[in-house]
Structures are given as C-alpha cells and as structure tokens.
Image (cartoon, rainbow, N blue to C red; front, side, top):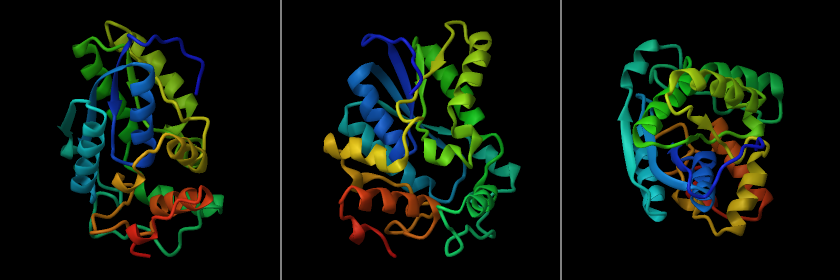
Length: 234
C-alpha cells in the first residue's frame, strides 16, 4: 500500500465486486476509516448476479450500506469473453505461473477501460457523499498482467481526480503490494468468511475452479491451509 495519510474519521466509498481483493479491502477499510458505502457495478458480466449477491452479503456482515450501479451499457463495448457468452473464457489453458500465457488470458477477459470507468464513477459517488477516499481491490499478483490493477495506475488516477472532483477524492488500496496468498493470510488472521466470496468468472452453483480467478484463489487458500475444496466444481 502506498504511504497515504488518512484518519479514522475520513470517509470512504469501497468498490466491492464480491471477490477476494475488494472484500478484504472492505474489511480492512472498516478498521481504518469511516466506510459510508460499498458499491458494486453491474456491467453485464456473466457472473453479475453472483457477484452482487456476494457483495451484498459481505457488506451486510460489516454493516455497510450497499448500492448496485447499473453500467450494462459497457457490454456494448464488446471484445471481452466476460461480457460475450458466445466467446470462450480460458480455462484448461490457464497457467497462472506462465506470464506469457497469463497475458493471453488477460487479453481475453479484458473489458476496455473497466477500472478507469469504475474509479471515476466511484469518485463521483464519493464526492456526493463527502467522502475523501475511494477504495478498489487490487493486488500485486494480477498487476503484472492487468496494468489497471497497479499502484502506478492509482497514482495516475489521483492526479486526474485532483482536477475532476471538487474535494480532490483520492484512491486508497490496502493490498496493491500483496499477492493473493498474502491477502488470504491476512483474512485468515481476521477470520474472514472466504466461503462467502464470488471470484469466479462464471455464474454457476459453485466456483468453477478452472478459470484464472478461481485458480489464483484456490492456490492462495491452499497455501494458507484453508480447505474449501467442496466450494469448487473442479
């Protein structure tokens, strides 16, 4: 996490997808700031309903107001297997330790300017409610293939938001310097309810276990001796 100055009384809006990174940032933010709202974006992704259900449940756990923001117009962008059910989301070919392969997977599931759009909308929400910070869920592991998950991206967003928000909303993320296993380790220490997450790219009854997101979560849980095998299909 970058060295940003904040106080317990500072207000924050959390961008909550229901996945590991954003959910842990919600829990950590609740300890450090005054979280006034958690927002979930419905952008027409395959797992939207599952993500919304998980986010609502997790926000309720920590008594934070939850809001769903409809941005399904993003689906018209096309070009992403997360949005187009006729496109195949990479599964069996996913090798999370192979950087070249990870770049190919990232290209398939990339949604044009998704995080840029999310952060700008969240900043508008934050300004409207008088919040000083917006909190996304990013990590060091995926920043290697998704540049809009990086600390550099957040610093660039801060420079932009200094002009586009009257109260100079800033970004704050507690996990940009951590990989998935390290994030799970923090959650384990805090007795985080991992079984309530939805990180899977698909909207099945259980986590698929074979998409890139599931494989990263599965490994992080295994490294930390957390047995949730029954929550995965594979």
